[in-house]
Image 1 (cartoon, rainbow, N blue to C red):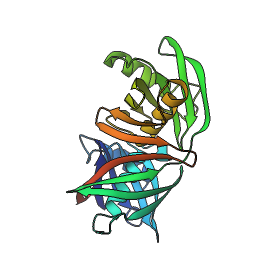
Image 2: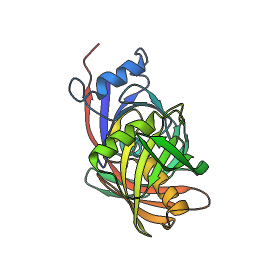
Image 3: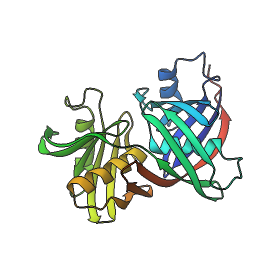
Length: 262
């Protein structure tokens, strides 16, 4: 089975054409190929099919569970689709289970391609008090193509991050589980985050998580609607306009290969 690997700020994905994976059970395949010791290693598997304007995709987390969309995963797929395309400002449309995402390439340097992506708007945005991991605190909840829970305030230390991230992901309040971000507003135009991704655990970056963190910080934390969001893997720029939330950042294709396991 042929595959490609790409990442954005260390958030890495494996990409397989749907036609190449047609005879395989995709949930166990995702667990196998994403395993960092006995597989190729990745945060998720994206199975895609080319379309006239780009591609459609399905996303499987490293644990084999399904996810609706990933901002970094979408951008990695765009980089894969356009890696041999030399057009300036090339555009690509990615059809995800979390909605259609329109991406425009704004720069290219070596293997890295920078995209500005229209990621849609939040739904069911609200703040609730939740008890998890032995603590009670406020959480900003929303659907941003996928479920998001953002905890605003000082960033937790590693022990608390691990405890609260795991507890919130599987909290009864979220029957389909949730992505979790811890977000600190350092300035009106700068938000720093830590990420616990549903079905993965800690990740160095998240595109939808960066967007959700900016939305939460702008609504309840005093941040501007146009800000840098700094994750452990690097900085993405998020702009919340009336028509969409726009995410700008890079992705790069790392390699192509063949998965030999039957």
